[in-house]
Image (cartoon, rainbow, N blue to C red; front, side, top):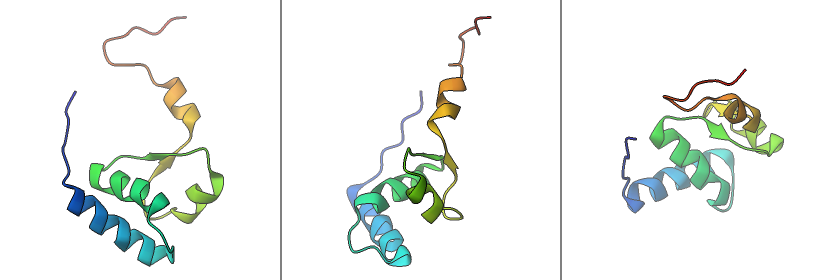
Length: 78
């Protein structure tokens, strides 16, 4: 598994940029969005309102997508 380390400053700056863009007073949700952007992955959330708000900023996915995924090297059971 590849691991990418991000400096706190990079994540914090991106989170504030996201919060400013979305008009949020804090970076609580923006931290997740920023990390999603920096890692170039999809945001998985059970919060439909958050998913709607970040539409067009980051890709989103439901938890069901993760449940359907098969780990690499594992065989699917029938």
